[in-house]
Image (cartoon, rainbow, N blue to C red; front, side, top):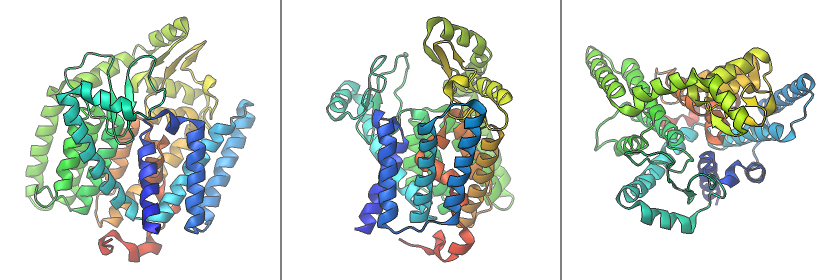
Length: 417
């Protein structure tokens, strides 16, 4: 029974982290996740440690500080991040280092499922949409502008734009977000197998990689390239290292320059980011919302950071420079979101604990690749606010709740189940 409950809870947190339904994003959904987490906490009799108490107290003090600074009370914003902290704590205490293994295992299964539906989508999207409409649980997400359907384990969307290829959404609301999960799962896989690229010995790597390729995501491709090149540089010994590095770099540069959604897209996003003032004016005139893109979002985040450098604007959304009249320009950039909402306070906490969690990961797998998880998450967070997704939040802040030195007997290399 305990094993079943752990599996169900992990799967729920993983799937809901994809944010592909209205329920996952809603206040009711967040409250449900909090109550479910408290129930798991009570059932497994997880102790309340000093670390959890410190995390909640620090968050409470921050909330008080921003309240006095802005004179605006944001109760659900406070509750939402308290939920992130609580979920992260329970996840870490329940699974410890096995969190990495579970992440890879579940993502491999979900990758297989997504590949099945992706092939169906390529061959006959109309029939897949008909199937998706029957089992759709997405709620009202995107209904006014385009057709968006999610049936728990997979998402199908009819794009507003004319694209020459279909994209694999997996369980997430967007292919790019899904690609970040896949890239991190590939990272865990390569650390566990010590860079075993053999099709026979490491079929999971090819399942995950194929699924990532079908996302056609700029972020996912860049993250995967950085992961592989970094691991080869750190883990491969002898003269052969430089040969593999040279080949990998040549292939990576060629793909980056020749694939239209890599270099061309990055250049396009950069140029659009320079026009963020025009986008803001259009939003104000029309009273509608627009995306600021990665670079434009960073500019908005930087302006907010300059205005509220220490604590950020907290949960007061209308204080952002991306809000003009009834119009709004959203920050897609996750790092910019941290700068805007939490200022120096948030940046220090995010980068310090992400670095420490990256060290825990490398030590768990007896690897010297101390910075690889750090780099993968920074790439992912530059494009998406992955720090606001339960499972990735737990991985990023794992180092705060978990002391690997006290759990040496549970090292991944010594645990077979």
